[in-house]
Image (cartoon, helix red, strand yellow):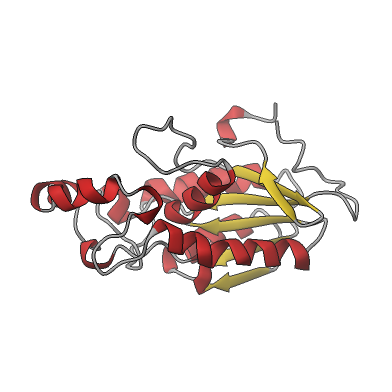
Length: 217
């Protein structure tokens, strides 16, 4: 399953982008909306990331492109322990979708106090946009050009892209032709690795939902 992450990816072959979300945070455990706010990795999240580091350390990773938010930087620092400190670039372009006025609220609070507004947004698909926040369409518009620039800059390389759930979902749903509607079949699992590959500038889906415990098969 992981043949795209090999140790001998000669020049001219596919450029591989491996998309990974940061480890679980304290706010994740509280079911609290983070968006552009931040919280540290939980003890369980740290353990998760060490498992990812051990797994990724088996493969050839040429560089890391990462969100510049603290929870992602913490994730990258742990992963780098297993990748012999490959080069890393941090960018604000990969920050999580802004949830505006809803950031800092727990999901139970959101459902209790803004149920009608939330349901309306859920039915908006790509135009889902919390009040004062950012739509999924806007997330895609800022992140997709970065990925296209990345595959142009690092042709034939294998690049680990570490960011957030909103970023990962927007990219994968776009490539899969999804409408972001609640009745659609679930495409991805949380905190798993998803591969994209490109040749001659065209970005396509590779294997999705790769988990360290699944092994190399």
